[in-house]
Length: 165
Image (cartoon, rainbow, N blue to C red; front, side, top):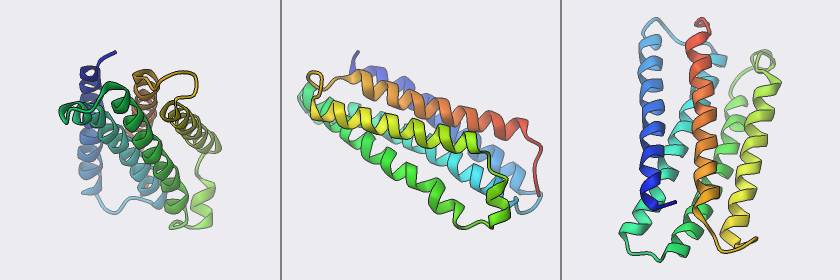
């Protein structure tokens, strides 16, 4: 796998974030969204934006002349850091909505989001530390694919769910 492989991931992540922003803006013209819709939109944009930013790190490091092993080590460390901060988004955002609205949020989504992020984060730390061999592109690529897949799931849910006001 080469550094150039990450440009495709960047395109997907930017497309999801961009289309999500457009749909959110168009839907927002009808009035303020419910707190649950606001929460879901924030999570969707957060996942998509982290995927977009993380997918740019390897090509940027390569453009700066970084040795290949260091590219994968630093890309993995930066993705792990971004995922750790990303994991805090739902918890911090959920505190801004009422208890009744929090109860409307699905447990499986919390488990999938936090469990997936914990797995990706742990895998990135192991890759950056060189556990199981020198750092490689595979875990980084798979971690970004996870972020894109989850944000795509949230995007599909946003489109399939009737607007709540």
